[in-house]
Length: 385
Ligand code: 2P0
View 1: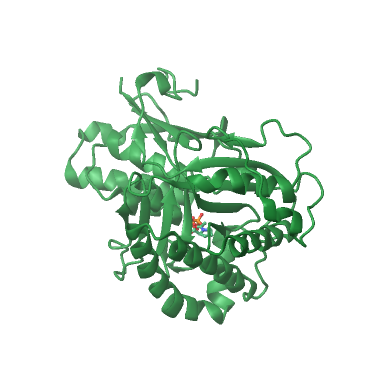
View 2 (view 1 turned 90 degrees about the horizontal axis):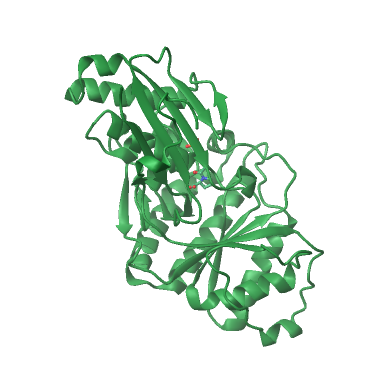
């Protein structure tokens, strides 16, 4: 018999984007990136792991469906953790021969347009490291599963250092500030209606790194300077600088994607309209009050301070009407919306209904946590519950 370990881990949203690898297998990035970790009470992945002498093979279930354990990235994580355990002699020799069962779930739909692999791999390596009692930098292990996963190992704002060593041992994430440092910071995820199949991040960054002329400038000039400036802005809670750098980096990242050949197109007309409305709102306010950022899809993440949420939600309601107001805002309790006078004078026309499917309201949160026995996803036989 052996114990089951269960872990809950967060999603993160980059404000300075990771795009392009210098080592595909070890997932070592071309540039540093910075992100905020989001509250696991709103969005999270959960994973349970268990090793037993009577298991005949390693097995994995994702969102209720058994998947192949032969997945290269999963294998890289398993092999690495077992080899550290062997080296550190952290468990009995017999235990190292036992097979593992892994069961993982996300509490948010993948259709929400948010990468689930970051939370998933942060969960997996945290759980396996505890199961095998290894002492290691968990961000380095999570990186082997998915690059952005290394940032989900810490709460608050996090910087992934690209590092310079060929083996990736210095390509690790570090916390910039904890989740309480800028406690007023909020995030609105605008889930954009989207039927198009986009190029995956891994393929997109490979094409971009191989064909884009612009990426060199981004990696060598703009990102290094932005990373330092945004870390300072976060430490000083300087929203104006933070917002400008976030929006500029999102725009430059998508311009870089467009400069690939063939181009990687992730934004839609709705995304562009969100960008236009945010600039309109910030201009009317006289300084940036809200910042957009987009990953490899049309879904927008807006960063803003808590006291702006009632106004920005009514801004979204005005320009992107929903045919059902029920459940339009999920996550944290929705505040009473505040009317905005200057909307009446806007030359921008409201869109047709339901271009934004719903909004997830959340905040900056903490890193992975170990769960209680009652939260296991595996039963005592090591099968999904
Ligand atoms: C980021 N993205 O910094 C960037 C911005 C998407 C756009 O990290 O191949 O799933 O597993 O390392 O981490 C998404 O890419 O790619 C991503 P892999 P990953 O968040």
